[in-house]
Amino acid sequence: MTSSRRDFLRGAVLLSAAVPLAAAGCSTTDPGEERSGGGTLERARSSGKITVGFANEAPYGFTDKSGKLTGEAPELARVVFKELGIGKVEGVQVDFGGLIGGLSARRFDVIAAGMFITPERCETVAFSDPEYVAKSAFLVRKGNPKGLLKPEDPGKKGVRVGVLTGAVEGGYAEKHGVKKSNIKTFADQASAFEGLKAGRVDCVWLTRISLADVLSKHQGEPYEVTAPFVPVIDGKEQLGAGAFAFRKADADLLAAFNGKLAELKTGNRLLPVLRPFGFTQAEVPGPGDTAAKFCKG
Image (cartoon, rainbow, N blue to C red; front, side, top):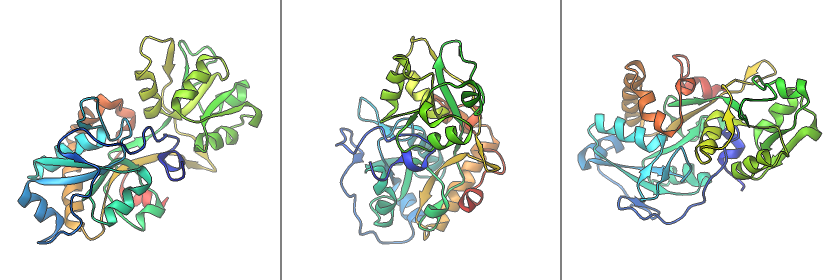
């Protein structure tokens, strides 16, 4: 995998490559690159629909077993755009690495995939303010027998830590005192869970969101996700922020979206939309968590 969430979304992994969709209203084909007649916001309001790009990654944006487009970002998109007078949200599925290119090529109007805001991406697209922030956690055996609660605990206690290949958590672990020989890499979340189950590692270090998704697939088994924490490397908090991405030319659409998103946050209406996908109050952005902040790095 060359350009995936794993490399820049604080350790989350691409869960599924692009596959054909089974639902009406979701398409892997180009819905029409040639568009005319006013700006995107005006056109969407006039037609009553808007098209979002997603990468089929749970819990961010994916199709469920029935073929419905869902996930934290598409469901939030439905709420926000409905309040903007746009009643229908359609999906275009592409590989995660092709989302920004697809947006620029006008294959869809907005990226709704839980994409992290980075300074590099901010050069190409305009991000909304974050809908969530991602903190780290450990997946451990029930009861947390090693007492792993903080990022420095695995190093102090000499335990073996599972991370994903190419993920930032390997660096986090090493920076917090875990010996290289105690850092075990796995190809994906499923294999990391199996490594923990087999006793090859004592914990798995990923984002709390990703670990909650793993645990949801193994209900009833004797494992738990610890309370979230934020690693600090060289004095900087390692916190990621997921947001919607827009073409820079669509400033009116971005402003309208941000306005409604702010209303959801101040009215305590954001978390109820995200909660079904494993998000908690720990992932709700604070007042100072803006796109401008994360674009600066």
